[in-house]
Image (cartoon, rainbow, N blue to C red; front, side, top):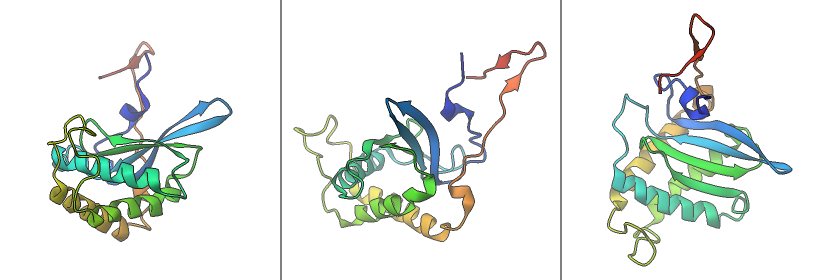
Amino acid sequence: MDLIESFSIDHRYIVPGIFTSRVDKIGNGFATTYDIRLKRPNREPAIDILAMHSLEHIIATYLRNNDSWKDEIIYWGPMGCLTGFYLILKGNRDSKELYDLILNAFLEVNKYDIVPGATEINCGNYLLHNLEMAKYYANEFVSYLKNNKDNKLIFEYPKTKRLVTNDGNNFYDS
């Protein structure tokens, strides 16, 4: 059994950033999954779950209403580890090409006074939101992105080598 792509990243060395996680051939085209990482895994506290949910709603709304990108958006959602989000787009772009889109999406969070879709009718857990904390995390990430725009580490995943046992088999620790 192969180790899935996201588990092949050395999480000890990943920094916040915009990374290409995987590229899948779909029919005649591609779908690319991007890792939008806000926190250093296992080094910083995870994002507050209420804030994460609010960020998911606001940024999904922004992405799916963005005239330049809305036809490319397949999915925006949180990582289970609560250190970032996955963005799946049609096509295969370099992660650097998403810098302005992601920066603007997180800047958009400050424009909201209420979380879109945070009602009992529209959301499966409408009470699980915290807009003020979402703004805090969004501003933190915006500042980080602006301060590191020219840092190649925010666009390149650290890779790990798969361990091979003495008898030539792959070793999986998960």
